[in-house]
Image (cartoon, rainbow, N blue to C red; front, side):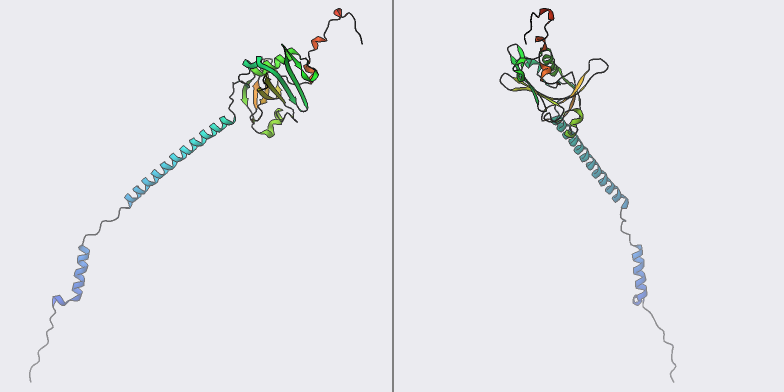
Length: 248
């Protein structure tokens, strides 16, 4: 009977599947890693972009604000071209000698003065001589009237300054015409503000027809009264010693 021998098992290194996987894992572990991303650099770039965007937005805002301020200033100037310190009726002083007609309008009352020769006459009283001193003072006062402070542009507030519509309000429209019938100057005159300190700084509220800007102007203007208040009373002021007789 033949003697049996134990069977010897041999393993080949190349045939070991576990060993192959281990080698692959070791090679993967020893391989160089890819460079990491740079979050810090990306943040710096993003921050720079945000800063540039903010700067551009700020610059655009500044430009728009400047344009708006300029447009507002131009609009204000156009709406109210007159400035404080200027005459209310520029150039009138040089044209006083050319005037031929003066009209005061207040409500239903109209007082017309016509230049006849070297004197002024009240048309409503059959060209009766007008009070020369009173009318002369009015014309010189208009020529010398100086704007000192802008007031409201709201027509609904004009009544507070007696600058509402002359046709049915408290204001008086003063119109000056030359010999050709052309209007030399026109002004709406409102409430007077008398200087109580006696310094001669009387003032009056005025505005130009068709203009919504009211002004406080330095000067004294008396446009009040009825027709009879503008008549020359010196003709009837005859001393009694010169009266020889009176017939009724």
